Length: 283
Image 1 (cartoon, helix red, strand yellow):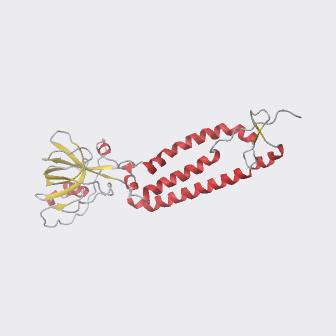
Image 2 (image 1 turned 60 degrees about the horizontal axis):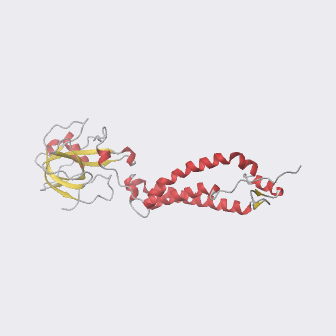
Image 3 (image 1 turned 90 degrees about the vertical axis):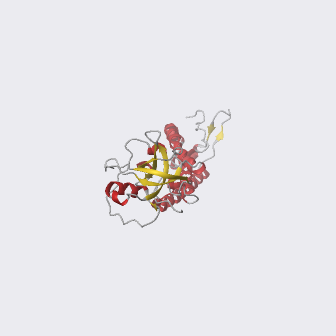
């Protein structure tokens, strides 16, 4: 039986190369955020670094393997030629058997091409976060997260060491909050220096010094918060060191937000790891 030459769909520019290239792009984004910078610390805990690097390397290798396999397949498949009218493509029917073995024969491809195209378009949406890691440096979480309702971190009871006799004691926010709840006598009359970023308070005379505490990643961040009085509030998200004394007020376990009467404030740079609550360093 004779008829018009079978038409084949026009080949897509990327075709099956799309998903392997997406793997390479995602892996490269992970490596950019971990090997070449400390950007990953804005999203996850520092202890996850080796797993992120291993994942990035694995994704790049899998993507390159997929690219190699697709290039080899394209080199083996029959060449499509224009028909005499110039309106379509045709191939030698003798090539059908080889094309069918490739899993992309014209009959099979024609029946399922639209589904694959739609899936590929959706998959390419995953390239957005990968491109973000490659070319943009989103900031760490800050005042918006710290100010949300229900985001205050609880502190656990622990055995606190006796504080050294010094004019000023640098202290982590979590320790200051914990002592104010469980060991407030150790704070009475002591000048304490804290580090964190600022957010607006409930009144013009107060503001909050904050640190964000994460369990594994930024998605589960909880706020460590101290109310500051006595010095003018800096702008939201400004990192500062605040020196002052604990304000003797009752602080409950359910709402652990102690207050400090501050005497000095110094703007500082954001620490390398913004989610690691550590005492301020230096004088």
